[in-house]
Each structure stands twice: as structure tokens, then as C-alpha cells.
Image (tube, rainbow, N blue to C red; front, side):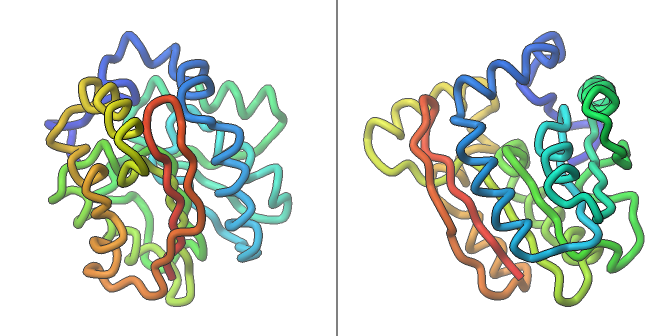
Length: 214
């Protein structure tokens, strides 16, 4: 993803300020992020990156769950990062927040032993997904892990119908991989091992799926 084709969290910049309550209501955020965070904590990482951290909800929760770890977040949206910084100050949490694009991460090689991502990959084109997975591998340590929660293959016709709302908002070009359930195969093609689906949640907007890759 580049500045040219960047999509704000809810597609339109004026909606960014409403991102937190909308996501909280529409995605079963508390449930799926609790499950995602549990699998991150189980790996006992020391250096964690929240990829596409947005307004920092998961980044802050990760820092609280891993008080001895260095937790950073990266996002391309300066307004979302500003919200994240304010939330971190209010929570008394020390985060490293960085502005950057997932296809060209502003970090050195093998800098993190865990990367977590929530509701980010469906914003990317197929080309950007592949480039992002390559960048994630670059900044992960050889034994590091990737944890992803995002829209996945609908679990029923009802979930498929509901997901049209997301596609209308975020675009069909970037979300067709979600409908096809393509992300695990893209991870394997990018060289990740032991790609497994760890959980799924049916939500008011479709099926959320969680993955872990090493």
C-alpha cells in the first residue's frame, strides 16, 4: 500500500473519529480481540508490533497484557495515530507509534518476535497483501510469529449477505480475497509455516477469522 491507494480505517477520513464505537458494535470486538491477544500472550514475545494499529485499541491491550514487552504500532493514518497516542496517555501505557506503510515498514530486519494485526489485511489489494507479508517476514525474527484477525470466508449465506456492507464501504477489489478465504494460502505462498486458523466469530457484518503463522 502506498500514499496513492491508501484507504482510511472506515474509507472516509471524516469517519475516523467514529471508528472505535463503530468497530466495537459491529465486529464483536471484545470477543475476537480477547482471543487474538490470548494467542499472542501464549508466545511470550518480548518485542511486538501491531501492524495497521489504527486507533491503538489492540496495541494498548497488548502492552497491558505483556508489561515486560516493548510494544509498537504502525499505521499510515496520522489522525488514527493521534487518537492512539491520546488513548495510550490516558491508559498510562508507553507505546512506540510510527507512521508508515505496510509494504515498506520503517523497521530494521528481524526486529520483532511477534506481529499482530486486526482488521487490516482486507484494506489491501492482492499485490499489497503479498508485499506486506514479505515485509512482515523481513522484520520478524526467524522464530517469530504472525497473528491476524480479519474478515474471512463467510460461514453461511447470511454472513455472506451481511459482508456486502463491508464491501460497499471498503471496496470490492480489496475484500474479494476475504470472501474467498485467500489469506491463509497467501501466507503459505509467502513462506510462512504452520499457518492455522485458531478461531472464528460470526458478527453483524460477516465472519471474523483468526490465524497464526510462524
